[in-house]
Image (cartoon, rainbow, N blue to C red):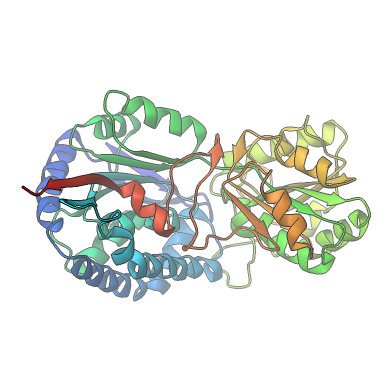
Length: 460
């Protein structure tokens, strides 16, 4: 059976490929199991050498890959290439810390005993990744898993299937052992059977909350690690002492980069009443400078959403908010390419919003943001925590101590001060509530692709 990838550029068929079968799954798992046994015996330095060669091979095709990404998911080509730079940053950092992160742990000496804890690879891990940041969401697990001695099987979104083949091509060029990295294009039922297979030793999924529940169901009959990153409704709080121009500039980018299709993008903003009007005016002014258009045009700064249905969902949220009394401050006519029945959607800034509106409570994943006025930190904190999600939150202020105090009370995996929508590979990427569970990146990311074994020897 075939699947079709429709490009959001013009809603035409970009490519068709065959789904893999149950026979393909079996053969892929068999090869992965065999390859992993030998890979686990390889030194970390040798594994790292393969990762370096992989990066060289992948980045050597950056221009072609960036264009492919723009065709597959709509991001402006001038920005798509930045994703590949992010791959290098994250992978290189995990290489740098691998020796330290994976070394045995020795507790205090105890006479007559030899005691230590090993970190061993899980075995074969499955990585299920989405289309919105197709390399960055997957590299977070793929590189640490390989460095730790695992085999990896990638199931990528059928919206961005060429990402999987680009990974495979680069790993093959790097000389990675056959079967150690593979990919499968799978229908949902086959994906569930794949994850449930006894030969899969860990599952890492990035996607929707609904998808996360399906992953849990698939592996319910076995006890294996399962990482779930399931999105967010990330808030920003602009305090009274914030630099308004700086905050507005960065929050516009945080809200509308990648057409708002980022799990850690800014979807709701709370602004202290003393600077509210000034902030909103600046925010709208900057938003109007965006150029919505064909993502292959290098002057385009805002591309289409991934699908017309996704754009229609956001249009529905906007209409509901307007019907309930919200006001839109950006005239859609400034963006002539924004048209009903297409994935092209103008950036939308809403005020007079509240949490009864889905645009302030449900994930939008599009170029829309609501801005609310608040009277103090307590009100901002209450509204920021009024969400089923908990991925990131950002505070905009000159008062680091006030931000530190707030950060202890905000229910998210990451709290930023004076920045947003960025992953630092030295820090743990994680979430709470319906954002999911597990950790990628940082020293702690290796803990989720390894298992521990205690060695307890007594001398006689």
